[in-house]
Length: 404
Image (tube, one colour):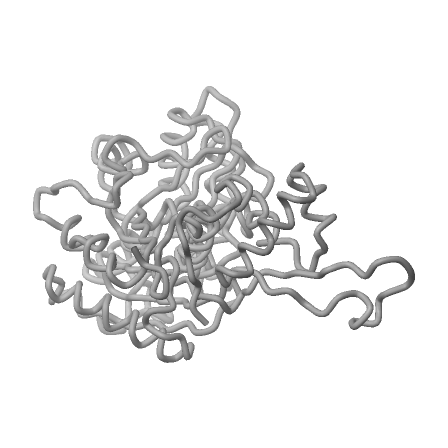
């Protein structure tokens, strides 16, 4: 189903925005509900409803009498958002994977696909081709036409400014991760939003995760490299170049030394121990080839109570406390959320960090919690951000059937 937009409709744009904004989360409603929620007059409300129906954004349902709900008086007209009028797309475009979700206008997922990427072939052209292929495949799986996309949001492991562009980097990594995606996708949807991946994780945690009803929090992606989404006073921070959560500062922190994440550190530590002959004889990891020695194995053993593995969890917890202290000093958050795939099995690491953190700060220590969203916070945040962009930009968008 295509949405048809006509600029210059009779009701004022503000009235249309108000009624559409109400209908997006209202379910089935009558005009009196819309009037009460928006403060508009009856005539203006009815005009707006009729215009939104003509644009394909709302549908009128059988009235109360035909629906079996009529009791007395004049039956009310009933309306609802056309959730199937278009789709939105959220994509977690990590360095080594693309997770693409297609959802309807109420956020119900229609398809979700993940593609693994070869990180040794990540040129700008190869990445652009991979993003387009992932988008087309997910739309086909959802049964959605290519011209039925209202909004796309892509999360990338790079700073992103307000225009969706990433700054230069010493080895051009950021621009390989975001190789002009705004321009690439502009002909695929009228609304395109490119964001830093950790910022989208913060959107997800604030919407459905561990930061609901919290106005000051940090979401820390701690796997391959540290990255952070920063929310202060209820606002997601970006910075002039999108770098408010960049972690190069960790290179200069004693006891941290780099922005390498906890997953990377644990793998490095256990492989170094194996090379030095420090794995105890008879230990489950003794004698394993290097490619099987990784952070996940150490975490699993630590969670099972293995004393040697728990020394690594303690070391990781102490490092996490130092990193959390940097954010605690800079932003004074109430909560720091450890998110991403690495968060699974991090209970012992976070326990150690909670004990250590108060000794690293003068301010009250923020609460350290694990994300409940598993491996999906960036993907969830991308869909949420695409829906938010669709809600606020639908009436300004021009899509097939009304594209200007």
